[in-house]
Amino acid sequence: MSLLVRGAHQVVTPTGSAARRGPELAALHILPGAVVRCDGPRISFVGDEAEHARRFEPADEVLDAEGGCVLPGFVDPHTHPVWAGVREDELDRRLRGESYMEIARSGGGINATVRATRAATADELLESTLRRLDAFLLHGTTTIEAKSGYGLELETELRMLEVIAEASRRHPVDLHPTCLAAHEVPPEHRADPEAWVRRVIEEIHPAVAGRGLAEAVDVFCERGVFSLDQTRRLLADAPRYGWRIHLHADELSPLGGAELAVELGALSADHLMCVTEAGVAALAGSDTVAVLLPGTSFFLRLGYAPARTLIDAGCAVALATDCNPGSSPTQSMPMILALACLGAGMSVAEALTAATLNAAAALGRAHELGSLEEGKLGDLVVLAGPSHHQLVYRYGVNSVRHVVKGGRVVVREGRRTG
Ligand code: NIG
Ligand code: FE
Image 1 (cartoon, rainbow, N blue to C red):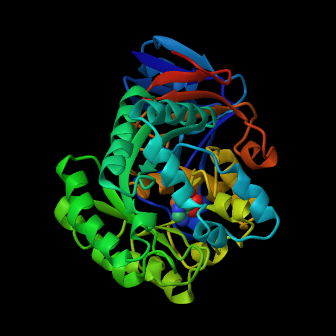
Image 2: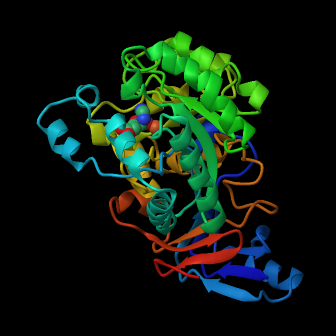
């Protein structure tokens, strides 16, 4: 099966198989009138239409971009997409002045979602997760990282990870599973958080690893949640399990999570709203990707991570939604790009690379995802407008018209196909 995407005003993509840094973050390839061809799941040609006609047989299927802009599919390297229940009530509480942490400590927050998620069946969780994946796809996201962390007990953590695996099998969006059993201290362990840390290390992590349900591990390293020392112990077995590390680092307080992520060779250090100068320097001198989540800053009405400082220091910056029911309930990467630019001062070109190639690097997949180049997976988006600027210029509007995943058209005219 072959697919030709033609009729684009331009094809816009970063290039390469590693994260881009500094000025290179904005170095996009812009190919006016170019075509993209997929043979099977991979890209076999990107370039001039006449050259394509000379070198290839006509494709089995043609997708007409009708003057739109063709981009790589978005990669969202930090999401919590499996949950039950709603926390809309917390929105009004925060608008009246209560903080995220105050709400969490009064029985809301992560533990409110934990209660609802423990009570939900696997089928219910799968159903709501698949609906959320549709929303990701309709906004141009073709691959996500997906965390557990609303079970906080063995059985429900396993159920969440099994739902992630099943959703990845059933849905065009690919999911990379991360075990986040250390997302919060569950209510039954509030009196003795250390006992919970030991349970995660001795019971939950080995069970998840033994079943092969995670590729990576994460910890919410935060004042009042898990300390640096506890985080270090929670991550000590990651190499033995073959797990990569993502870390919720310096989100609400400057604990030094970025430095710890670098020390442990983490794939990514995420959030970084409160990253220190030492944290920026550590990230700049490492391969750990700085994953920024401007949706969380916007939704919690907090400051943005210092995107310009991180980029100018030479860090590999990526963007993600943080999709979750408490601090960023969105699946829209275009919205995240708008916030990264208009809120955190990135350029549109930087934000596009951060949401594609660098986001793929944050999942260890920059060699096969995140840019439109021969040999990479045929994951792409056709926008309704002529350039990538549409994503930010028309903020809050979904400009994604068609989506191709692994060489197959999965969204046409803004609707799921097949
Ligand atoms: O990334 N920081 C911790 N976890 C999520 C929020 C989860 C929730 O509120 O349900 C985050 O912001
Ligand atoms: Fe998160």
